[in-house]
Length: 178
Length: 178
DNA sequence: GTCTATATTACGATAGAC
DNA sequence: GTCTATCGTAATATAGAC
Image (cartoon, rainbow over all chains, first blue to last red; front, side, top):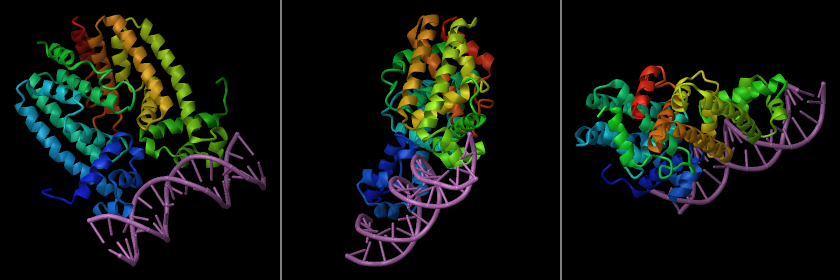
């Protein structure tokens, strides 16, 4: 991925953006239009719709590897790092993760497996830190809840619904018995 | 809804079941096939796809009204009632709620508003009980997390992922500072 | 690499027989 | 009330020019 033709990146970015607004609207026509290329041009880079999904999954793999590395060295600990990045909509992982979740919810087997893998890795890190599996799972549910909220457009955005970050981190401490 | 023709109910049940596996797969053809009627037969009862969604929303309204009433009189309190019913996959609200969430994620305005309304009502009940809004919102995130898990078929089912209910309720107590 | 056709299905919905 | 047959459209994908 040193210097791929710029059109490829634009297409992938458009596909992710459309996925966030609903898997159903992320059609080949819509992707081509949003990326500013013709359908033929799109199909040169991605010969099928599934090829688009596979490309997103590849990007997902590199971004999640980075996130897990950051989680391990986070000074605040894995649990708080997890909640903080679940809360931050501007985190690099956020749009790509939500796009993959959309594919998983639509039944895409690869996306399903990728989300599953990531959840197992996150859980392992948090269990290693907090020591208690029940607590770790509960913390993960909070993060999942934040993503669930973000998955419904228009209402209860993180700004209005999600607890402000400091309060949320305080409650994570309380959950851990600290 | 005293004694509607049996075919109508079968169709509605089939539509909800298909929605849970992904909004995209819940086509008129698929619903008719799963309900064991022809497409024409389906369209006699529901003249359009949106009519199907509207019927699910009506059912949702009655079921959520029941749930809110039960929440108010629950001896264990609103918060634990909420977590318990979020955890129970056999709860009457569960499939219909998840179906509505699917419609909301697909951008259906009515479903979006209905989910929003229900969340506000739940939050109000839990805030009234636990007194602290940050704690109430965090408890709601846990419930949302459970639904998020349930929205991805095949992996991390509630049996394997979700904390066993007693542990989860204990942690809710800890969150409330009890 | 990117484009303009065009083929091929899948989907939602209508018409009308029974 | 339920069916078969069919139409119009939109979606994925192919072929081939530039």
